[in-house]
Image 1 (cartoon, rainbow, N blue to C red):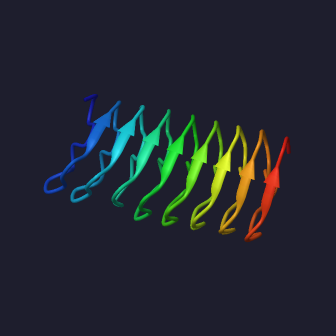
Image 2 (image 1 turned 180 degrees about the horizontal axis):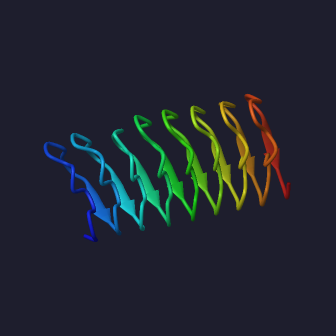
Length: 139
């Protein structure tokens, strides 16, 4: 539902795309839910849930991710099993895996850091490659 939403999907199953260009590149992807303009625009992964404007826009083969909030997980390309909730949460995390970032700007500058838990507004915002960290509270 929306201009070009899911327009390339030919053989994928159980997808829901709502918003202009949501999931418009995934020809064979399945089990994705995208809500918002340009969410999952370049997605070719399975089992992702992206909610919010341009959320998960750069995702290519990343799978089993949950991104909610404007720009959350925007830079994710191949990262998997991540949960980013809040505006700009995990914004630059491109190949990071198994992170949980909750709060606006939580983990915003993380690129490859994995196995982190950042809870709170701007928690872990400056982390780039650190792994297995737990940060609680305001950045």
